[in-house]
Image (cartoon, rainbow, N blue to C red; front, side, top):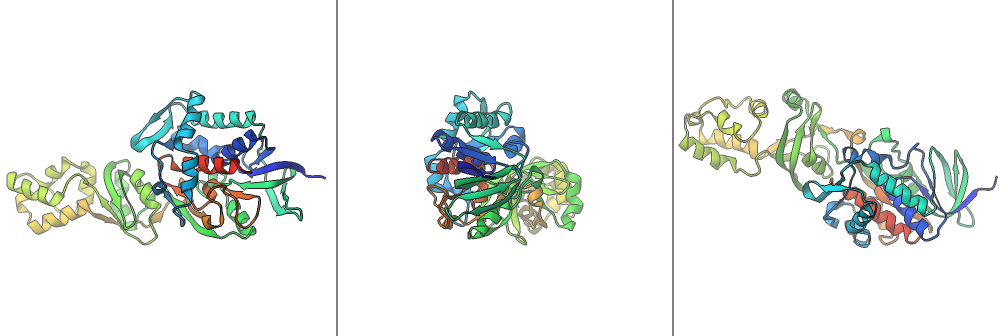
Length: 395
């Protein structure tokens, strides 16, 4: 049976895949999007607690992690957050800003997905769902022949928009990486990013009882630092600051957590000891941190005693615990709860302007499958919009 021919086949009805399809369709290209899922844009729907943190007011190259830190600059400067905000505004989708410039829908993530699907329809894009990819080969005349459960398709341009490995229950697979390797590309090893930490057994014993407590902290290692909440959970540590630092963490490393970033604890305790010597250390610290947390974290430090009974050395040791908790994660929760995947297709083998492979003409990689990972806060969606838009201008 003769393959159905299109100008462009896009593998993945993802954020980047849909954006790319829209732009190519607007240029009069005959585009089909193939996805094994039963719905388009599943990760869009679940993101931001169902409100979709679709971009950020401030987007810079420094907000992204890659072995090639300059790669993202062209795309994010050519299709900016303001361009996407303009599209959202054209559809009268109400949105609001949260901390650090993060933009969320007022109502539902469905608003963003419906906008993209409407744009696809206007551009004449075909979307085939529940479509399993069986094989992709390049023919002698340089067409990409894609054999699927819905038949065989051919095209002169093939775009890989398959995403990463995070949240496998949403249908994430390593297919994009396997395809890249099939066509001779180097793929950087992948790990879970923006992911909670699990704890060592010794820490789990006292942390398990504190689930639900949130504390504003400065979390850091040698490569990065983030000031945001940490959240204690029954499995370990989560919250925005932990998710951010997890993308810069390697197994076996210790993370420093400043539980009181606004307070230099040692001179504060010395001053309070002089002013209110009969006040207990516990009551002094309860003004600054949750009681349940302090009682558990400093359980061996006799904090019920009055300040006057503490030597300066003991106060220094307690201050160090509060200003620099040396936390050694056991591991992360892995792809099951990770928001993104670190690593991926080597950007040195892809054009930063067009997203075309430098190894195979007509082959493109966009979105999370590439070795570009954004911070928490709308950056990964902006990378999807920007990289998808760039490929859409040329395919």
